[in-house]
Length: 428
Image (cartoon, rainbow, N blue to C red):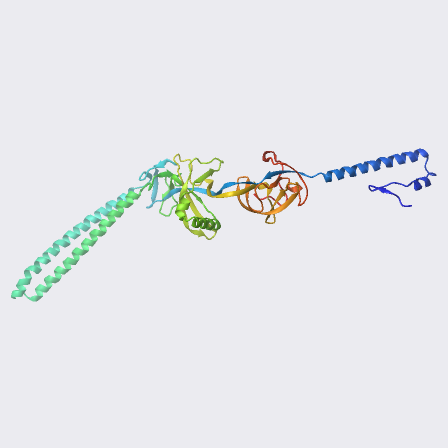
């Protein structure tokens, strides 16, 4: 006779129990039956609890799809640089005798920065003056000699015509005059050369005092007193014009092309479109720089090594807070999306490049929909296709749902969310 089963527990039949009474006492039989009854009840109770838990719909947090006009803000990492960065180098070679400016000080154009040993240049200047004086003396002698030969030619010409002197004597006088004229020209050239050498000596003496070519903040000197300085030496320092200061950043070529197409559709020029944008700078400490920037320049080419193009924005810097070499995040509102559909970013699940959202219907039944996403807006994401205003989407608990199941929805509370979507990764 087969043994009956209830919820997976085998209950011994009375047939078997009666057949074994010969080996068990009545007390032993009662104890065995009591234990089997307890086990059967416990097992059946556990099965009933499992069925109840499985039947309860999961609790999820939902939010309605909102629709509004959204400003699209684009952000890049920016590097600060001076509007002008002048590297200060020596134009003559010599020993550095003095650093005149304080490191990091604001200097005016023409202010002395460094002094090289001027004695060599002063000696060259004195020598050039002597050479010029000698050249002027040679010119005077040449001119006097040419004056005498010219007088001879003037006197001999009528005499030769009258036959008082031979034609040969006139020819010799004429030749001497031409030679004297050549000597004068040579002396003039020597004077010009000596004058140029004198000017060079004056310049070199002036170059021994290194001055600021622009107004700006001078950096810490790279040379010390006593160093031998030459034209090939590294820059002695750098002076930067930092009011205004420039923020350099590099949009990708794709971003550039998209922006240019939008500008073309709007019927604007590149300068007009970029010039009307307001630029905001977030500093590395998280604070927002209080003054807005304006478009300054767009580079002529795309960098072939990075596929990006350099763009510069100019920021006022009256208190010199911003310094060359600093970093920040620069952002601007490029356009306004009218009637954009918004959902929390955590409601969107990325599954192998496809974006899915769990939509809860009026009957609390889940429908997993593929959607097309647009730009991000704060903690929200613009959905361009797949949803409509008023749809309820699962913002918390997406790992609990699947297509077609029923759920127990409650309002989404961003501030109290303690867990994140972890199925296949949520896009940033």
